Image 1 (cartoon, rainbow, N blue to C red):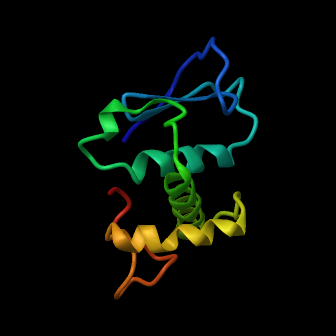
Image 2 (cartoon, rainbow, N blue to C red; image 1 turned 30 degrees about the horizontal axis):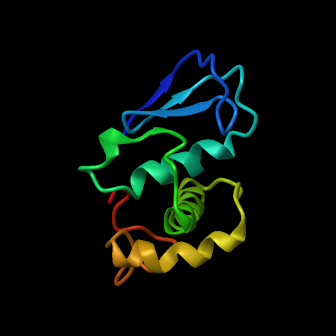
Length: 117
């Protein structure tokens, strides 16, 4: 998963952020909330490596993906020592991260065993 600075001319769900081929494009001039970057990175990370290159736009998340991305971005904030930038209700996605082998066992949440599904 990569992050690239880019000019984004079209409107996007989150200002200044676009997913293209499973990578984050960031238009720093249009970015409203830097915390959205970790949330969108979470959407990319929780998708299987086979499906990741096919993600475009806003990742079209379902309810499970939204919960898992919230939990993933919270864990990333803790790992990076950042103030929490998303909602604490993201913890409801933890069972999905455990199911996918991203956390659990010797690394209880919010510690992660690995960051990509």
